[in-house]
Length: 144
Image 1 (cartoon, rainbow, N blue to C red):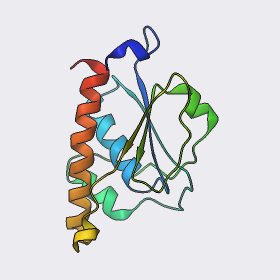
Image 2: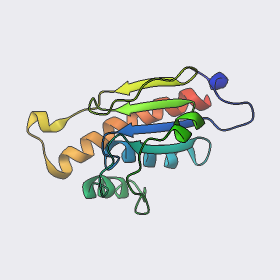
Image 3: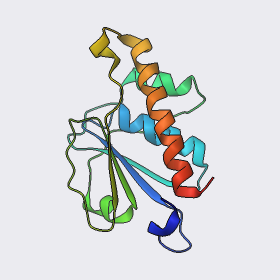
Image 4: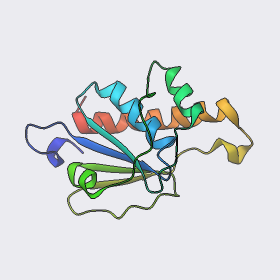
């Protein structure tokens, strides 16, 4: 996939969605913002937004120099869905209806807790899985 799905002259736009918008979608958005440096417009949202970010998600990004302290959980809105070229749903809890003309992906992310791995070790594994997927998507969207 190349930039043909983006509007001419505009940066490609991507929406990362999870259920609470406190962890996985925030990880993906923070990582894409760091990688793209403005070359991709990035949104994140939740189908059932929580009250706060997951502190371990914030900490795991800070370890890579990504600061998302100003972020907060947000709902999925029609306005955001209309503004993006790609919707990425992280995990299997969140449900979003695909839209015509919008690339739609579901990333069944690594879940280390299923293997008994918890805490920051779990969050780093989740972050690193998402980071590899974000890098691949970035390359597809920008040709870089």
